[in-house]
Image (cartoon, rainbow, N blue to C red):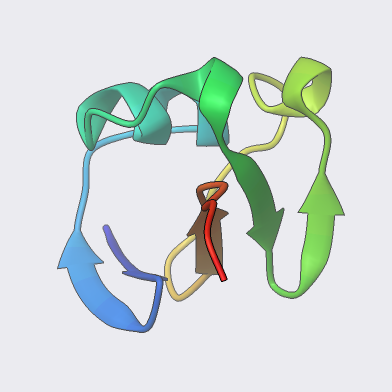
Length: 65
């Protein structure tokens, strides 16, 4: 299915947000996630199904200034 991840259209196989993080090699314990502009808590990712056209944001913490 085609979804948008961090502004880039991608063709993915993942049925849910947790599987998407694994598919894209993101460490789940080190990121924050949102789907269609709604924050998704880490414990809710496996239950958050993805659908064609969803917009996913995956954010990683940064240090510095």
